[in-house]
Image (cartoon, rainbow, N blue to C red; front, side, top):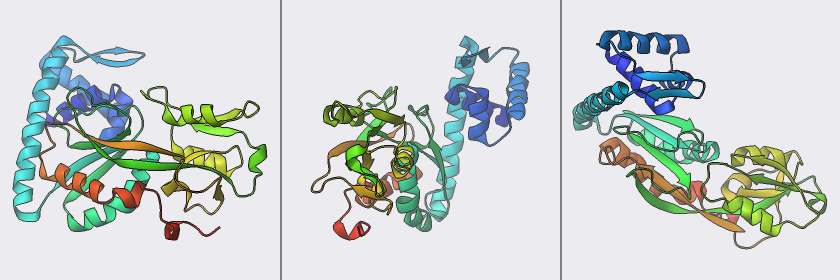
Length: 292
């Protein structure tokens, strides 16, 4: 049995599709399909039921996935034990979250983290479909207002400051609104805040699942809207409407799976996220903002 085939099995179980698994593994879809077919031939049983909605594990598939997770966990712990002893934390850690939050982590958190731990590898995965964390997966997820899923460890990192912004070239009195919207979100604080705030003659022109998309729409004059202050204050094309404290604050939580939370590589990533939270997500000081 080929371990690469088992990697494809686990990737499909996590992504729910052949395309998603191929993307995560960095291989083409035909290779992923060939490997899962080879595994099924070796074991003499189907691992997944294929349908238009994705891949669903069969009963046999569930048992094989459970065993493959055990093998993956042992292999990763062995690799970490050997590497950590000589060179400090090593190996792959997946960072999961919304695109704009990962952009902040990439620019603020990762440079000092990677410099301090050169054997560490980080893979960023953006998108709402990565809500839950798989067993034995060295991963850290950043989500707003999302409760822990199936025993996940979760901790509050801090409050992310939001304020209303518009294009510097637009008349804010004549602008409608843009708003965050995610059908999977358990709470919709941003959209509810706008619903309470906007006037009867103001319309919702644009909704999107990420603040970086809303920022582009606001910059283009499509409307005014709530943006993370850390994202907006450094954009010279935007102007804040109002002053004083943030208009809204949202709690950002860190999620990790209990199987891997004690590994050295996950621990150093968590420590780095906590240490750099204010710089990456807190309300900017006056000196941090772009002069207007």
